Structure formats: C-alpha cells, structure tokens
Image (cartoon, rainbow, N blue to C red):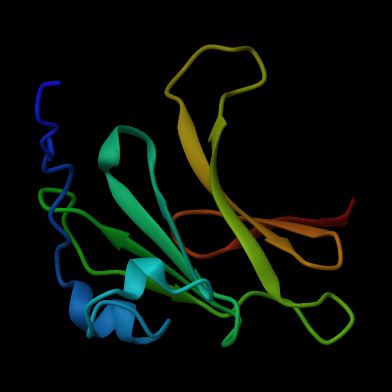
Length: 130
C-alpha cells in the first residue's frame, strides 16, 4: 500500500487579523479553528472570512490579503429570546432583474431558530424567525 501524505494548499492570508479576531476569541492562540464555540466561514472566492463566537454573540468579518481595509466587528441583534449564534454562512445576492454585479451577505443562525443577514459593512439587512 502506498504511503499517504498530507496535501496542504494555502487558501488565504488574513490581513490585520489579530485585533479583529480577538473580539471572537480567535487568532491569538493555536487551535482556535478546533474550538466548537468559534464558528468560521470562508467567503466566496476567499475574499473574506466571517468568524462568530457562540459564547460572546459577536461576528467579525475580516478581509484576506489583497482585500484591503480592516475588519468589521458586528454585535448581532440577538437577545436572550433569540438564543446564541450557532451557524455562520455566506449567501450570494443578485439584483431583481438578474443582471448587474453579484454581492454577498453573511447569514447568522441561532440555536432558537432566528436567521439574521448582515452586509459586509456590518449592517443588519434582514431578521426573521424560521
């Protein structure tokens, strides 16, 4: 049997990550990607990384190298009745007529069924219970 090796591919380099990721208790210590309370999601075409903290109810959107600018820290509009953040995902957006430039939003889900959509600038676009 042939020996199995590891094949690693560099996907992205975080720009100005330390101060931004510290808000969600990530990036300053090794193994933070294995922490179940830290929820990372790499954006389309690896342009940005969204990281949320289930314990702190904070979302950080950090650009990768070449993306320019610093990160955006968002304090999602979730209270006790909305629960804790349990999922983060990127959602593609298109214009109503299907033409024009495609954009993205960050969707945040909670353990009680709330779904919140945020722009890359950190603005709340939509909030609903599922």
